Image (cartoon, rainbow, N blue to C red; front, side):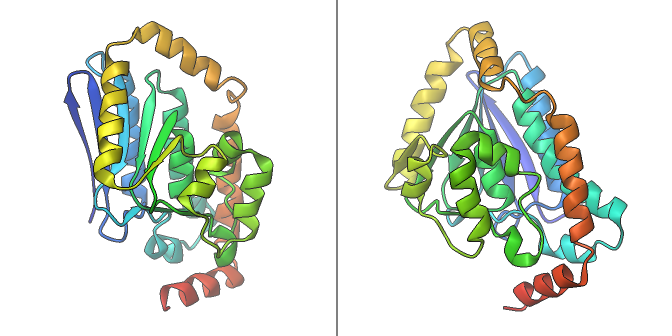
Length: 251
């Protein structure tokens, strides 16, 4: 596996960092590790607040691994792959700790889903967003509920329909995806650390209850996101989608 997921715990702050050499894309192994790491951090009494971030300074997350997408040959494998995104979103949703997102660069597809699944997301001016799924013959079905919950149906449909267009970090902030947009990584990291320090000394039970309220009405997502994974798993088998993915890879 050419990728990693690590966690560092310091003074009550659990920093979860994922990495993949292909612009921090998300193959199945990374998705499963990320979901497990978020769940474990939520159960660790030493962790009071979580920061979710990726390595590098150019891309936060390129979304699904194209190499793995094109290798899918049957519905079961396809559903299993897209269920990896469901696992990460549900892990973040169920985690009793507040999660701060750190988006230093571009976010595509599943990367937008990750940014939507955290509780408080901060970004740099370079963190433009795109839901590119329709452009390769599928749709943002699994991440859709998280994105829609965060920015609303209207903004989510803009991203989903205009699938080849980048939307700026300022646009994402105006829709509620990002709470703040900073000029550079250094300033953003200072702000994230300051907030995380405050939360690390706040009442854990109050934060747990607050998060529970934030996510009211999502108890059915275990079933919903699995169903959505099946939709994507079916579409990725079509000749249209396979040709679109190959065309995109060869650009």
